[in-house]
Length: 378
Image 1 (tube, rainbow, N blue to C red):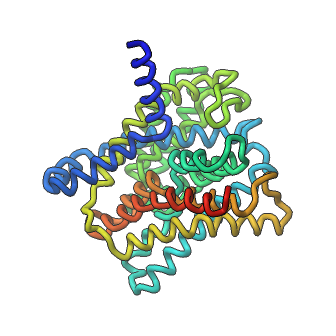
Image 2: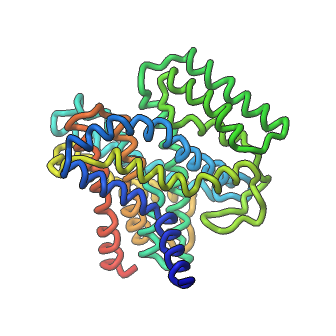
């Protein structure tokens, strides 16, 4: 019995570590939407606003925590010389898919109707891309940390794109600053007086930030992003990509440890309420998103890396262009953030369903990367 319990615990931990609850939620949403469209529509009408605008706050909070932690002294993005190449690759990995998408929808004569979705193929799903990369590359291969650095930079740029280019309503700068300014000042004061409970930061400045973003027209799911950097943390980053920390990162680390598992349940709910589209939801925007992600990512990553080398930057030792191309294909799995961008890009309707299907079909990058790696004998 003890062995069975240990095995069950290991399986459950594997599910959590690899975001498989999110995948399960997406599959459940797909099945439900096609088996009982009316029931699914009514369910998501009630639950989707809470999941997308409130619960996802904590997902983006953990994203920001990882980004900020990586920038601390000793972190993988702390030294410009070391971070420059994967950051440049991330920029290329966003620019090329966006450009392909724009050219695709323009060639169809539907630019006015579909142009707003240009950022959907810019996304990289960190968890699933990392999972596929681990299946392809041996332990210690430089492609894996390079992909993770690229994904972190992609997260930073994605947060900026979401805030700047996808307001939920007309930007009201006065209301935005009226909420966000006091929220950040309050978080700074809490840190100055030594408050250590992350709940105080979340329920105080975090709530004020959410109200300010909501009223100001910015997506409120980003509410904790400007608050996380004010949480007390260590002087250096000793927690790199899953290794156990040698020091405690105080409030920021407590925030991550408390929310790590609940966020997986939140992501399951996100997949459930957003991924349910009819199997017939295939169209121009589906092809635009899928092709832009799967083709654009490796082109952008490899192209930006080549440009970086021309300007004196260096690839990690052992990372050749064959491995870089395969790694770029794995980065074409958009899924989570791509789905989020679809809901920010288009109103409910056939175009949104087609865009969601394109984000889901980006999973085709996984078998393609595995087949390509086998063909290239990586």
